[in-house]
Amino acid sequence: MSNKMGCGASHARVNHEDALKQIDQLKKQWPDNIAIQCFDLNYFKLLNEGDKKKLLECMNSGIQNPDSSMGCYACRPDDYETLKPFFKAALEKYHKVDLSKTKHTTNWDIKGLPGVPEDLILDVKTLGINENLSMRVRTGRNLNKFPLPGAMTKDHRVQMELAMQKVFDALIADKKFGGRYVSITPDHKNFIDEKQYDELVKKHIMFKDMSADKYLLDAGIARDWPYGRGCYISEDSGFIIWVGEEDHLRIMAMQKGTVLNGPFDRLKAAIDYIESLIEGGCAKSEEFGVVTSCPTNIGTGMRASVHIKLPNLTKDGTDKQAKKILKPLGLSVRGLGGEHTPIGKDGTVDISPSARFCISEAEILLALYNGIKACVAEEAKASSGKGSDAKSGDFTAQLAKIEQLKKEWPDNIAVQCFDKTYFESLSAGDKVKLLECMNSGIQNPDSS
Image (cartoon, rainbow, N blue to C red; front, side):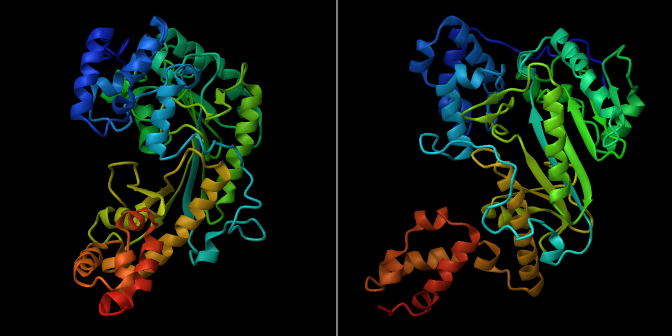
């Protein structure tokens, strides 16, 4: 834990004129930087001076780091409303939604969702998994009383942490939670030293030193490290709250078991209790849901994950094949320490539904359950050796053959009606189904 006083020297700001020239140049060079591509000069010119400054501040990380994929962070709880045309375009592009036709809704109740078991218990034992899985569900919250981390001063950070103390005191006094609060803010009454901090990081209880992350520094989020940073830890270490990371609060429930409802229900109950104790409440948007610093997390702010063994899909010691197969199913695959970290030696990976926005909390939980079901099926295919070509998600050979047949057999209706754009929009499972339906015509191109 480095005590970097006022850390954030690289948090460069540029004036309007320089920024506009930079953005114009970056638009041509970085097509995947969403913030840069969603910037509209005509809209910018309509803004007052204060809002122009706010927009450039939100975009600063993406301007300074053009290889960013999102490239922007909200800096105030109302930025999504104040700068709605910009953020709406960015949200639609990243989350692949049309906000003129859909709206984010909040719902934690799985009852009534298609495919939910009659008893509402999502137990992976019914999927053939008998060992306990490491399960984690987290979400983010930001206090209305303070700017979001990107626009906070050192004093804001310290005061926000102090404002949360009465919430943590209430949790500590509650037998369902208990535990303690630790802080890395110098002179805080619950201060822990570097050795203690490092131990908590290694246990994945505390978050890593953010001051080494240039993207977060340029966003303003990692400034003033380590002031205003800390962590609440329940007595059983199964419930934790990060303070002062990318959002004011990152709230997590963790559990080992087979019933996914456990950590999900604990998180819901805890959030209701915590929000009732926060003076001024937490930032939420009627249109966009839970307000988070990064637009990638807005809506639910939720990530629900499990650690699951996939030895056959990870035979090469990496998660590359698992990602290739599971991404089309809407699942993210990571190493055990998060993105860009190694998988377990036994083939254990971290999987979670990718969607956060325009999906409810309940739907995310069900998506995790269905995702585990898909993992079990794909792992079985890989084990039996039936996972090659289309079955494993690689359709290159089939598509090439269909394209060739299109030129050679104009009377083959199935081949002529095959639409590659439609095919690419399908899930991996439906792609396999379609090719299965067409197989006779592909193998016998003289079919009518």
